[in-house]
Length: 331
View (cartoon, rainbow, N blue to C red):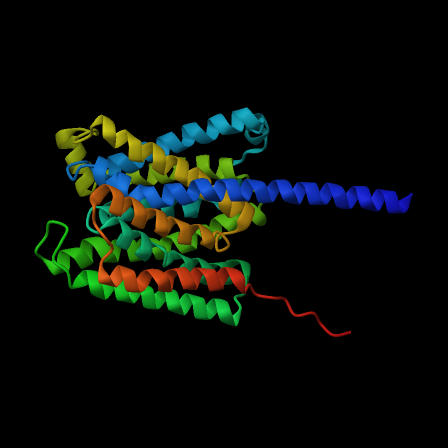
């Protein structure tokens, strides 16, 4: 009888784990497509005259709507409203929300000043900072192989930074503009992304905060932070002069919706797989970006991208293949 119960329990656990793994793969596939296509979509659909803060705020509003609809669909909305407290919300979502708001603004600036593939590859340095902050906050250690993989990723980022800094492109003859408005924003955003990802993982795994609820809370807090900055920022002045939707076209809505869906997917993958474990998504996303850039822009990767791409792919592959193993204490 005990044996039958044990088998039933094991079968149930296997079924639950299989269901979780299926969801992780599905969310990861969607996130891969979103990651890979986002730079190209943003570059083509968001004009340079569009005010950065307006597109970020619009994205946050769409995120809230999508997350609330998903919570209503799975029946968790009523429970979340009953259990919600302001203190609990701020402790779990307040800081990462403010960080993500700043990160999104920096990414919008960088989109416009780097080609899609270079942007995507530099953006992957967030894995380094995610690993660092995950160790600081959650004490999640890295294996020797993983540390080596992160060093390879740093080398790839350095290659891209040197290569892009020496080029005269993107409609600018000033190399400094490429560095200041292209490379620097995406690298700062990577640091912020690593910190926010570790904080979200902590809230999900330690505070047991649901992914959808965190998305709603972070979007609202992030929007409030952006609105507070409008009174003093150049974007705020531009909005007062030209209006919130200055430079918008129907096409501008596409990257806003795609980016909002991506934000929800990031939360789901982080909740189920962890901030660092979603690294395999990055490899596939780079390939998607390279393919789309070649197909739609007819632009083959630069020499620096060709040198850095295998380094990035190798780095992520090693990182996933050799996780840290907890040593068993000898009896």
